[in-house]
Length: 327
Image (cartoon, rainbow, N blue to C red; front, side, top):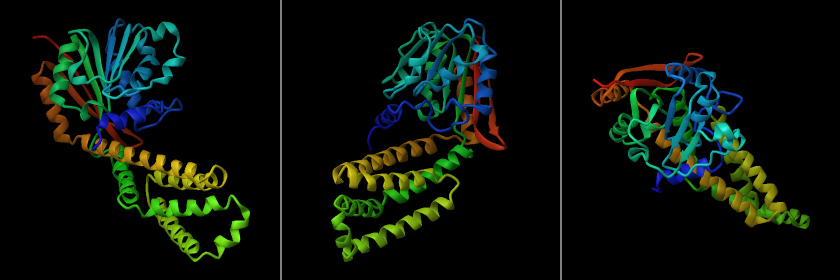
């Protein structure tokens, strides 16, 4: 399988600010997840410095900087193994921007920062994807005494993970068989011929064309049924929209352009499948989150606690925090 960081690099190259949960007009995290971070930041002194592990495009840095409670923070560093594209920084005022450093292509198990450099180390849907022993060692190393480590972590029973499982099933359906894609490509060939209106009657009388049309309509019906029965049908509706756009493109821009549109979308589906599989495999059960707390304690991070973050009675994630206290 292609390296995961390449898949995530392509995702972050789109400029999106977070990976899986939009709950705020800004496109960043809101609701109880935002409230968790407010409670974390309130525990710190005015002269705090923050390190964000698995930062992606810096959603958590952007969120914390927007909080009144972070006034006085003097440094923000984001680290991610993938190449990143935090385009939101283009709109940040120069003084605030000078406090931010983003480090892509950097493993968090080997952080290029000094010992005891940060008063706050954070991660949002990140550290659970990594080699946790190495992460904990680095967290303990770079935290100041009395510094706080906090993370929002995927819960195995959360709505986010359940939706990921369901969406991955849609992708498995589309990607494990080439039937849907091949039928679309056959139809594109006929659509391209319609650029010349004189071909319409020929296509209508073509037995193979009518067979392809019947197969395509049957597949659309099946996809529509799947979408209506699903709690998260977005990928199916997005596919149907792309298909209609590609049909128009075949008539206007030609067959090569239209096939490129479909091939690009299929590549995005394959990347999405990898990311969802990452997410599902990274999510933690009750016993696994407790094991993580125990490991934090045995590595000098005490006062470890964990809460279940919920929104409208829906479970979203684990909220974990601990403190470095020298004995």
